[in-house]
Length: 118
Image (cartoon, rainbow, N blue to C red; front, top):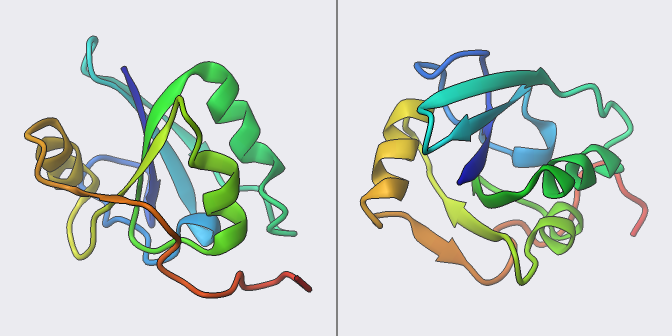
């Protein structure tokens, strides 16, 4: 299974980003192979078109520190779910997710998206 985490840094010891769509990096973790890829978040406009690419790769879980309504609407699908992880490293969030210890979100944690008119 593939998990995508918003991170402040580019490795597993980096903290989970406080705001998913504004994360410096996205870390794509493969739970079967125990490997990861790092992607710099180049979405400076915050339109979140890049998130569709991760859905197309088959990401089943998105782990966020916080998430606004626009990004949440894109990634919360029948095939992918959103989970909350605050004040922990990417590695800790992965371990907690695999143990079933992260809360699944049914709505965004932020009422409005930063950098959007709507």
